Image 1 (cartoon, rainbow, N blue to C red):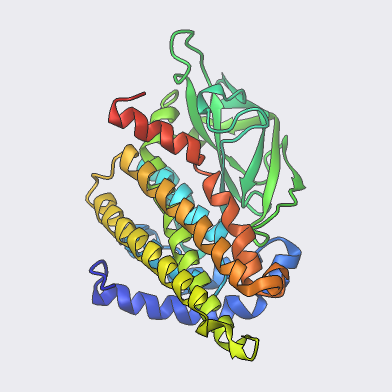
Image 2 (image 1 turned 90 degrees about the vertical axis):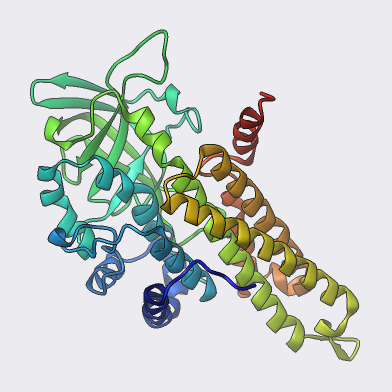
Length: 383
């Protein structure tokens, strides 16, 4: 269906992104999957083309374009080429907003040029071994000691943690028995700080090219100058960025569902059964037609939400609706597409198998489908 989301400038950016993905990512992607990570050099290459700094201020090497539509295009072009940019997506869509909103002038001067150039990689450390969606239950502590905080704790499921130069850590700097959400602070831990350790590279079911690690902090002295925003205000900061984070997951889900339909159409045209192409069977036609309709509905929902985000009016409840609908749609679409591949769909040499395993986490991270339903129910007044 016709989309009205993008301008000529966005179309030009799309051509740049498409060319980059085709030439510098897709050919080496299988090797990256086996290694369980993207090489650092790819970030530098993206930085040289301006693919990482479009939202950063011009005075720090960026383009000064805080327009989420550029983020959407990167995800769509990656999915179109049957690859994912998990660590890039996390840096641009989840972590960079915290730096843009809360970094002071000195921090901007220190970090923004490296972020724009792809020399500095980031991660955000929220989840703990015993704490998932309940951020108020965070146990990692940071105790003020003069011009430093003494940081202690452990984090898990950290995307990009293997190579991160800057890790935004959510830590408890205070406690209020009457308000569990109070007392959380964002601290930027830098690579090389004493007591900061990277744990094992977690072996995941899908998203193999996206490194996911455990991190630990033992008496790490973090300068107060590395605090993002105000002490004790992190819960509000995290909530402010959640709509974009959840929309980001939804954008990827729809783009990957569309890619699944495309590879399934190609396969069913080539594959024969009982002497005729599988695509000629009525069941195949009906399945693909129904899936196409679902994806177009989800795409319309995405485009509306993107415009609302740009206008600053995307509510937490609407972001939850978008994530819930689009990730559940992705699950149905990819599952039905895999079925049309028959036994070959279960073989990892076919892209539909990876699309299937990669899709499963979309209903878990950035808030599970159950959490999304709780948020929506509260908005309906039935909580």
